[in-house]
Image (cartoon, rainbow, N blue to C red):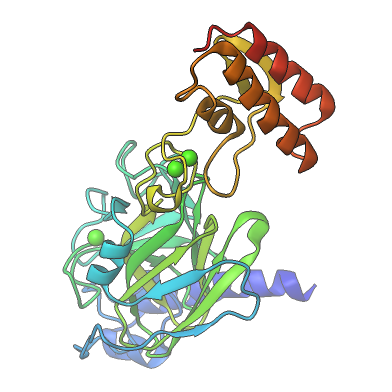
Length: 337
Ligand SMILES: [Ca+2]
Ligand SMILES: [Ca+2]
Ligand SMILES: [Ca+2]
């Protein structure tokens, strides 16, 4: 059972490392190279990994590799540029939990607003995301352990484990976070969408301390591969654009920015029962029918307009003949104009 062995072994290593850290002096621990953040020294310093100040430039290029590109995905390595492209995101700073400065606190896996214990009090975490370790625990690192920004960060406990964020809302199109690697290597970050389809992969050079991604498809998961020991802070996620009518199409690209999004086509209180389909241009069938009511001089003119429109919709296969009948019946009864 090789799969089972893979799972069990890191736990054994952690127990070993924790035992070593507990039993021997700091000098002895340094020689043992702990396998987890839980096995770090009490003062928060690591037995391995570069914690010295690095030149964290924001101009490093993020290499983009999208072998199965199904969506338009843009990566960012600069907070200001990302915020300008994706405004109004939810921010989770991982503060106000129980983790004290310099302390490592186990948080389970995954943790979220639905299951925040034992790191965060109820109601403290933003809703709509969960943080996972590939295996083992996640942990919170108290202020001072990560050598930038001086606050609490989160990470997979075991150095051999990758980590990932999942997003439960169907309207997450942008995700960003501060990141830091304790391993000194490039970080492979993959972005997945609905049905876990790969939307894109970024190879983030060591020393980059911001990652952002914006996609025109919904983002459900952002993962850092094992090996780079990636820690995170200031998670940002959400639509990242202004969408007045909430149909998922941003105002700038929405031909009908104030859509009628009722589930079925309703004309002057008459429910046709026909699905109110949303088109790629951001207009629903109700929006199109609603345009027939604009500027018409009498009821006959309105009904003729709806008749022409529903003929076109039927020809293009968007509605059936009986759908057209139901819509025309409502239009005929409507007190329009
Ligand atoms: Ca923080
Ligand atoms: Ca819209
Ligand atoms: Ca719209």
